Image (cartoon, rainbow, N blue to C red):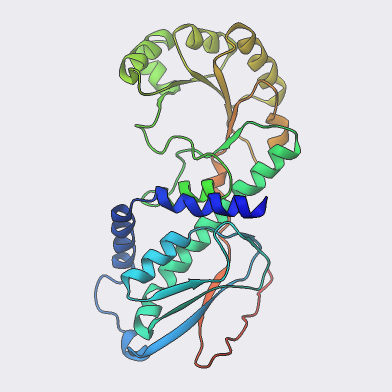
Length: 305
């Protein structure tokens, strides 16, 4: 039910701590204007209004960030579409009102954030749709392959698109990767140390490149096994063999997975499919903010590439 989904998506804004949000917005605005704002003399400080237009299809995501940017600049945002909406261009998405120089000071920062967040939500929604279309009911997840300083926005975008965010940072799950195994001197030693670090509060996941490594990891007490860079024809028998021996161990597949080949990685023994491309390669959506003098706001033209 669309109304139910929208209510769930609306609730995701509660995940964003207001203090963290304010600090992020502050850093973005300072980056764009650390000194004198010369263009403010051009626009002046008179009351003004602008319409936010969506000029490409996709999923709308990032309203809390957009709101926080303009709140900091003494502007008010009125949304015409809820978070998570499917955008059909050209769509009138919101209206922003406030002093002209403040509207224009926030414009690029707000558009950048909304465009990238919506792009990730759109990619995530497409991935989830492809997985469900293949009859698979597991978790499509993101990764830590995020833009430095922009992780909160990108992880939030994944959630709006219906994907799992995976661990937010190094403290969310003890992930033993190939380099940890080398540093520790083997899978068993690495998992033993990880179990000690995890205690009762965290799960332990181990990246494995063979069935032998996966069995070693499961025997040593791993909660999840990551089968990394397996081709589909090797992935499914390996996962099946591991599950036959350790039915309670969750299996994650990762590495080289795209929207096109995703269905090939979906299978009955795979619990999670993580995709770095959802945050690394999602194209930004096209939005524009247009000031208008009268009540009739002009509809922008779309530039087809």
